Length: 193
Image 1 (cartoon, rainbow, N blue to C red):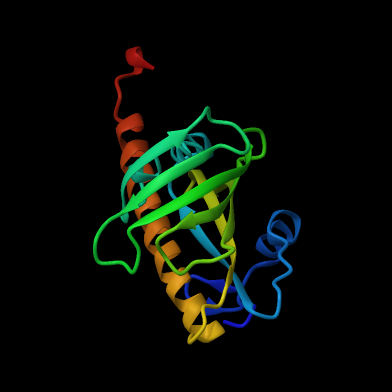
Image 2 (cartoon, one colour):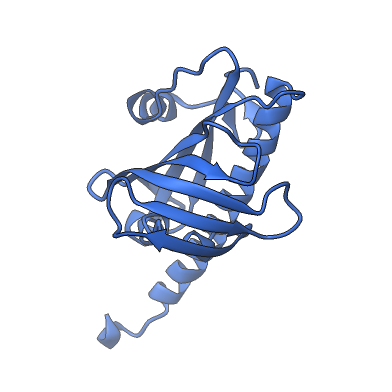
């Protein structure tokens, strides 16, 4: 994508409000040998519910389908490392990731890959959640951005396409899990709330 932005798989097309959030929370300055992109997903679940999944740096497998296991090294704080085992079928087996930012007030999580058996070198990402009304109910606008080195033998377009496909899969799974939990929340008897 050569640094272009994407929205649900299409180049460009962000609303003014989305662009403002991207400018505010997802600034990236990729080097010559890097690619970057931003993806947007609307989820029919309130921010607090979606955030309860995203903020769990120690349990990415709750919504990331390619993660089979995660072991946290330390407490859940800035600088904490996690060792992630990747399910078979991807060109990776492990990933060592560092928590860069966890902001419960603004609903922002940032992480950086610092090691592992894969080709995503100098990968960092930011995911931010924003309240929105969807179909008359509380919903969440999720924006995820990344920067990564382009591996030798690949193009920027190939690299961005691969990473975007992984993120889209993760965001779809996040939506599925969150929306399922939101439906369960709405069907609880009033005396249990």
